[in-house]
Length: 192
Image (tube, rainbow, N blue to C red; front, side, top):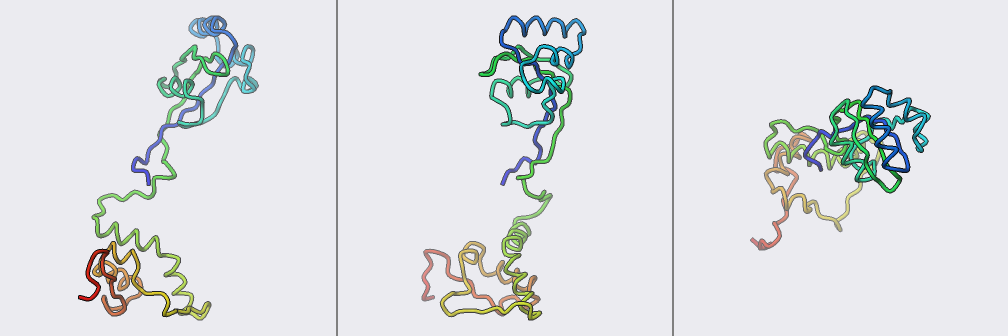
């Protein structure tokens, strides 16, 4: 799970041409006040020229490396280049920058202490099983058990009896310790 929730995204236009010389000439025209999008429509060899070179919003990893480095180094409103890539020479106009939330970062945890975080993670990981137990109590589903499977599992080994009993008590409203027996931690003597 990623720890940094913010990711930088930019919105940019570009002009793609075959030669460095043409890219430098176009950069001079832009510096003299000509409109970037009009020059893109006229000179760019990229299909985005129909939109004035607009590439829309993108994050890191979406473009080839030299283009990405130049684009993400630019300040909002800045034109950078010429930049050489495998496609040709680019001028890049970054017209908006924003921080977005990384969808893979997970929920914010705030000042959650380790025990609360552990309980939250256990509850999230076992939500499906808990839901099934709830359905079975309403006779929507039948829940079967087997002597071939033991109640203790690696989660018990990792979390310890106290945390598991607390989770069971919170989720099922039972007395802590009434139904759960923690399996010995790996390396512990099972006979004691």
